[in-house]
Image (cartoon, rainbow, N blue to C red; front, side, top):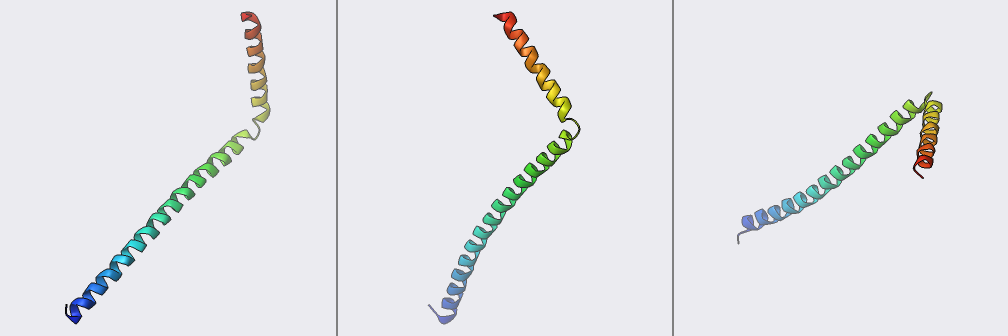
Amino acid sequence: MTEIEQLNYEQIIKYQTFHKKLKIDIEKALYKLIQLQIKQDDYQLVTEFIKNQKGQSQTKMNVGGNTFQNFEFLQTQFQ
């Protein structure tokens, strides 16, 4: 193998190693991006839930209480 062929071979090995490392880094970055997107979606759901709860919590508590009373009423009828 000539000196030029040897240098070319070494360059190929370096680029292959660089490519493997770059591919791993890209996969890690994509994984982190997916995690951040999931966290952002969760955050948006929580903030929307909180916004929807303001001023409606008392109404929802009353509806929940009425549902529970209706369930108790139905339960006593079937026994």
